[in-house]
Length: 113
Image (cartoon, rainbow, N blue to C red; front, side, top):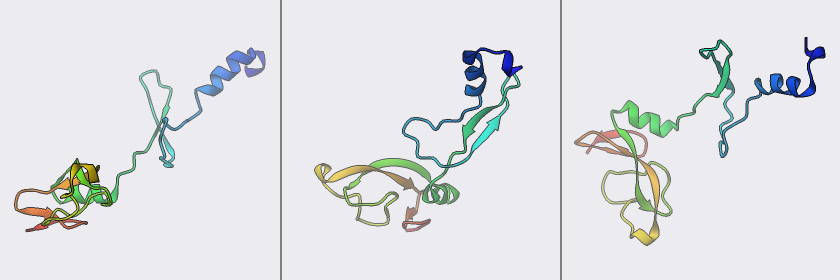
């Protein structure tokens, strides 16, 4: 069947099977085929979750973004003063863990204050 098709038609058939990462994506996860309403599977990348974000969610927290000191790492500690107490000119936006009431983020888990 492919031999009787024009070059453009062959390329169209082959293009349906290519999996390209989204622009700006650094996700190296293998694609997963997902059936569609037409029965033709489409490929989607398997999302990767930051382990600290997952720990936050597992401990009942929510992931948010906030202004923290420019030198701070993602998910800085929120127990007491620290990484998120800098002036706006010395800060950048980072992912944070908002723990349930009476708890704070110790850098890896929501703990009792």
